[in-house]
Image 1 (cartoon, helix red, strand yellow):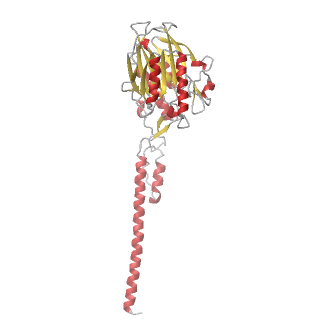
Image 2 (image 1 turned 135 degrees about the horizontal axis):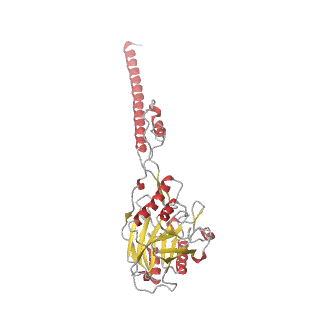
Length: 391
């Protein structure tokens, strides 16, 4: 081989080695860049303070606990740094290993005023019922709104059947005040049906949709002879998107006295600390709101999503509200939850004048009606008779 050819061969071989080295270095640089991006991505995940979780069954939205501080020790291997960083985000940064806890943001806030509820129907003079001038019949009923029926979507024929059943129950009750929860306020045709029925049966209808773009809300129907004069809406200023509809009425047998009707629907007590805390503070916030007018007679009713001994409900009792009696036979069971358990959670309590004296399920409905294939709702309609006994 000539000297010239030898130099050419050597030069070519050198170029090949240089090219291979550049390719290898390029791959190393790309790998490092990819590793760096992964580290940045995990940093962003670790810095997220709130993650929304929900249960469409009961429309409860919960907060997970915020992540704790990162350990000061840095991983020695870049190859596994992102794995260690992800793992370390679950650990406590304290020396003793105890988890740091940031208070839920709704632990210290209060209820917020909502826009004025929708009023359907005019107040006209009418004679009080013949049962007696000092007895008020109040019904609370969670209707199970069409968007929450499982499986979805609910056939319109089923929705129409259930609505007809709801109307029949209300007619049977002959109630002075009706408090409805999971009222399908997002459906114009549904609202129209109830509006027409209210007008035909001498009720004034008030509607307050839930917050958070929910399709249901609370609705209260009041006999025209009770002359409802004011309606206000409040939300609980938390992640449950719950509201309270307050309607002030007159009391014919005490001309100078008004009575507030509070219709509400609290969050379900899921087995998560955040929802349990939120429920308890919903009770606190409602008590605090009503404490601003301590001399105002009040009836509170609705789906409170807990038994009598629940801490949120006990806040009402400890604040001086007298409950319907639920410790006597028959057992008070008004709701079949998605957890396959029965609860007595549809309450009516009162203070400052009205006193709950007796209760029963409208139309003599029983526990079996909650699990029937053709059930009208997963709740039973509860009617309470209250007499007037000012303190």
